[in-house]
Every structure is written in C-alpha cells, then in structure tokens.
Image 1 (cartoon, rainbow, N blue to C red):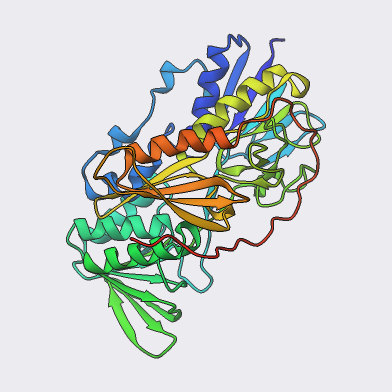
Image 2: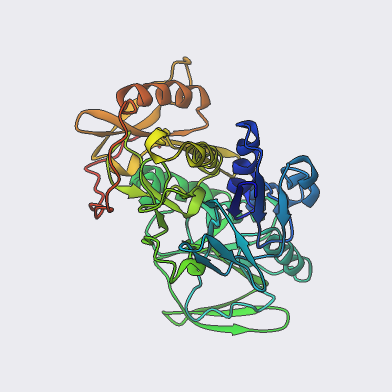
Length: 416
C-alpha cells in the first residue's frame, strides 16, 4: 500500500499543506477532509470586501480542487481520532493515515444568552455566515449592532459604515483593541471609529435579548434599549479541537506542539494554523497560537516539510509574526510580539515625511511593532526585528508548555 497523508481541515492551512507535500515530491496519497462545502477561500474578505460587495463569492476562492493533486472531502467534518490505530473518524467512515496534519482552525466563541441560530443574529467566520449577514441587511434598513471590539468586530463596523449603515459597536474595554494594539493606538482607533460615525457602547453589557421577525431588541444593563436590524456577534474564537477529545493528544488552548510543529508525543502528527499552539523559539519557549492569515500559510508549509522529515531531522518553525487589519481606509500593520513588550518607543520611517511607527521593547531589544499606513517603515523595522531575534541554530527539545506570564506596558508612544 502506498503511504497516505491525511489533512484534517480544508481551509487555507490545509490547502497550502497539500500543495507543499506535492512540491516536495511526496507521491503517496493526500486526503483532505473539510467541514465546509467549499475549498479554501480568502477569509479576511468576509468582514471587508465580500461583505461590502466589492468582490464576489467566486473571487474569494483560492484554488480549484482539480488543480491540487489530492482527494478532497467536502461537507465532511472530522468527528474523532484514534492515534493508536492511525485512523481519522468521519460521520460514517474511517480514514487510515500514515501521517496526519491537523489544520481544523478555530470556531466562533458563543455568547451566553445570545439567540444563536436566529436569522438576525450572526457570526462572521465562513462564506455562509457573510451570506446570512448580507441577507439580514437586505431585508431591513435599521441600525446594526456589532458585539465585540476585536479585529472582526472593528472590521465589520468599518465595512458597514462604508455601506452607509448605522452601526452600534459594543465592547468591554474602554478603548478599541487596546489589549492588542496598546492603549495609545487603542485610543486613536476609538477616535477614528467615532469620527467615521460608529456609535460606541464601551464597557456596556447586554442584559436581555428580544429577537423579532424584522429586528432584534437589545436591553442594556443600565436599562436603556435599542432595536436593530441584526446583530453581529464577534466575541472571539476557540480552537476547533472538540473532535480530538479522547484521543489523548495534548490540548491546551489548541493542539500543543513542539518547535517543529510535531504534536507533543507524536512523530506522525503535526499541526498548523489557528489550531496549533507551539513555542516560537525565536522569542521564548512559551507555546502560543497565532490566529492570522500569513501564519496559516507559513506554518502549514513548515508542518508538511517536517512531517516528511520526521522530528529528528526537522528545523524549528520560527517566523517573525506579521498581520494586518484595514479599518476606515487605514491599514494597521503588526509585526513581532508587541504584547510581550514592557516599554514603547517611536521608530522613524526610512521614508522622509511619513508617519513613524510604534516599537515595543523588552530587555533593551525591539520585540514588536505597529504601523499605521506606514508600509515602508514596517518593512524596514521588521527586518531589524528579525536581526535582533535570530532563529536558534539548534532545535530545543520538546517539553510541556509553561504558563504564560501576564502582559504589562509601562507606557505607550504618543502621537496617535
């Protein structure tokens, strides 16, 4: 029998892993198991260009299944794993593997008390979710409530204002995304959303939901109430690992891997993308997850390579994390690990007359940066970031995860 590699997850990470296996000359079977009806698509478009109608559903698809030499299972969510038998379970079938790549990503966090499943209460995680939101918007002209002040919530609010819809954005923090971008940039982003017409209800909780046929009533904890056309719930995500319960793999906010992407305790299973928690030893030995587009691309390729090479012959996966968000026409670019910083500095742009960026510093070294519409400066200082944190030449041994320390900032750079 020929060797078979099974990829659990047909999203971006699963697609890129399948492509990389063939690029490396693997000539066995590649089986990709996907829960959704479509091949991988450009997920960032869901809260931006697809929602606004700037691109079509077909334009978000990343590949034609016929172009990738693999056996594709769509509408086939994985339901279990038996590592001792090397079998992945589907609803009514078992699939044997010689090597397994776990790339099942994340799923939206459910908000307690929210009437999930109601046609006017939606999340934005899949193509069908955005279609459901567009349907709800088309059948009512009232305001839209967005619950959640993270990337998805802020991007959806921005897109809705671009569509000339009234928006009420609920968040727990005093400033938008301050826990990710730092307090000063958080204040700047809060002012930007306010200036663009987003009504902010920060530090406000919802006491009661009153879903109706054409609207949803929301009652605040202080007794105020509003009626909205629909509600977008964007309160975060959780790793899609419920199918791994009972498989005796290390699960702790994701599938825990060593530096080479191999799942701890296994030589035949790797993980990649949003579901994987691993130590980026370029920075430290603490396992973390990176829920970002570029990491799904890079980690899936590294995982495919290291699965073929085996743990002993594999290099550590040590990227410089990079991700971005666009809100109200402003591109926010992040590199490194800003939230590990203990202080901030302003970093001048190499292009005269352009905006400086915020650098985050720990132990005298740059550890992360955030730029606002400053692509040249971000590119320049990302290279410096990589220089100050070179990847180690030797792969450290795999070990259980250590608890992550609380994150603190002594100050943030002014000017935003």
